[in-house]
Image (cartoon, rainbow, N blue to C red; front, side, top):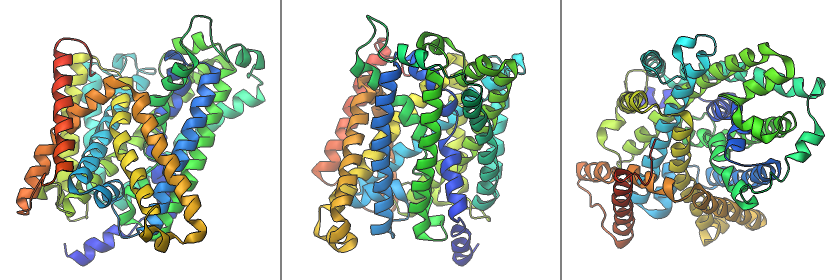
Length: 484
């Protein structure tokens, strides 16, 4: 295919499709499990509300960083990777793309683990979604998604819009049922506010919400990652803000309403997905079935959205010469074919790990959230760098500069908070996943006959990854930490 036709294929996503991509890839299984996962981690009503307040402000800051960068630097059309590379150099930019790619892979693994667990509600043969028949069936789903995206990004995102509309219906039914049946009990809500005597501290309760809230918003940057395929550059920022506001409203309402239906201990004891048990309490057995259908549709849509994003990330990085050249290959439909097959091949290998280790979706979503924290932080730091520079004054203008600096500060502080709140264990696990990227980076630079790790900053960062990875491997070997 000629370069002209490839370019035509790229510029095909309008505002509606971009919003659909954001909502579709962001609202996955997380929304159906939020209340139960937070309760199981020890968070009570007060901790959850503060956790959502921190998450809402922080994520809004990050979204506005993405929005501001899109306006100030429209030529940086590859989002997460572009911002880190432009701000901090090739290797850190590569690491951002590498971490984001792996985050997408673990997100899809999390979804696959839960998909047939939800189908198991109707067909018990699938159990919790990690037995042999589930692994075989979910492998078929993964490669069917591969086939859809190989047909072209436009047709795949069109399907994603349909699944996004379908998955929102159970959420609206859940919210309306609790409100109009008056199942929300203010006394239950208030009795659970501070938690039981002898429970974990309030600060730890807030930290306990971090992985769930971050996981719930992973994908909010989806329009920025696909900005090179947008019809209009301005639609990227608009779709990010509109998508964020819609998603936050849905998350807060479902979380708050759930806390008024049953005590925290009962929420924590619910099976997956917890929302099914809550609605069953409100309307009867049909509610659980209805929510499980919603989960299935939601996961299918999220799998498709993340398959697109996961393949596009290394493809875009390869086009700029940091990932190896093979990742830049396209098929006749303009789809990143090599990146697709490599991504789903890795997922297939991990599906085998799931079978032998009976891994749960919570383990994979926690790793996915941890992997994406560094790319998020680097994007916010780059926007802070832009707003504090003389160039920022010219690009943004004096009237808006203070406001944009505040957004950059909020996004940066939130990114640092995420790393702190995730805990040492997950930081060590992510180091194991970041370290092998050094090899891919070196191969990519050698293909272009360019220098690699040529300054103290890059050498220091690479050395930190390797040292932490070695420590992590030793700790895993002696049983101190469990990766899955």
